[in-house]
Image 1 (cartoon, rainbow, N blue to C red):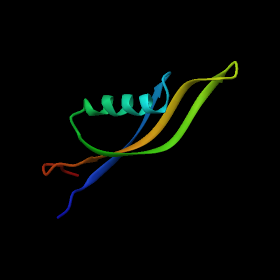
Image 2 (image 1 turned 135 degrees about the vertical axis):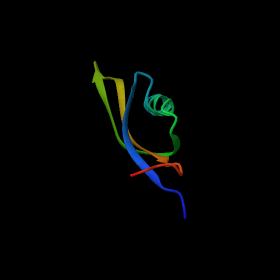
Image 3 (image 1 turned 45 degrees about the horizontal axis):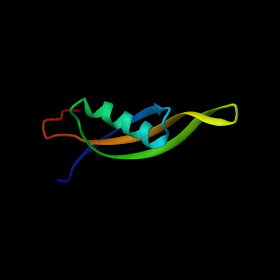
Image 4 (image 1 turned 30 degrees about the vertical axis):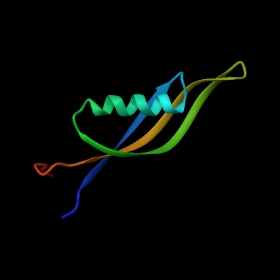
Length: 72
């Protein structure tokens, strides 16, 4: 049998842009101990103040592998 995955949706935010928002969300989710395997960005948005980009928010789907002891 192949691997089985579960997807969760995360929203990361940062004043330092898209990459920092993604990294922050994944780093926090990694603290759960789950076997995170991949991510897919589904939405990017941000705020503008005085004609300048400010805060960036990124929505992403993260897939993690279920271990052999997983029960439905």
